[in-house]
Image 1: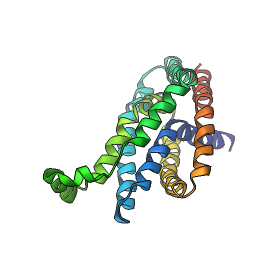
Image 2: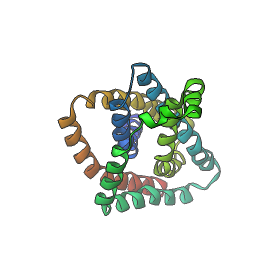
Image 3: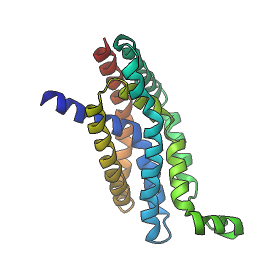
Length: 212
């Protein structure tokens, strides 16, 4: 029971620490939706982008089956270093988010181009755009998931992935809700960014200890 609980907590905290930026971006997407159907496109795009990130991270699990366990522990340095870097670059991270939040997502200029209208009509560019932003924002996620997955057996990995996919849905719901609760959104995101580096550092230490 203790082991199961630790796996669940690892999945929850790993997801939160690596996807706080996505919550900000999802809030932006939902705030700029033009019609209800785009809500579904945003959710689908988020799941699509996240799935590609997970697929890119699975070699970590496969490597964990072949690499000696004492070597795998060193992968804990990845979230540890990212956490320390985030801790000392809070202002830069905040600036990056502000830039992202000031860029229009579904703007009028896109409608004025005939080839983009064709693209939107037949390929649903909202889904593709959200997915591409999720992937582009997931570089650190892949690095951390590679190290996390490398220490898990198939059952543990399955539990973590189920938690991840459930939390993607929670993230979409929360982002949609935050659009109409801006004060709460500012408080949540402000303190969330302060806590995130410490969660990543703790995750790195946990992987290092578990590996050795």
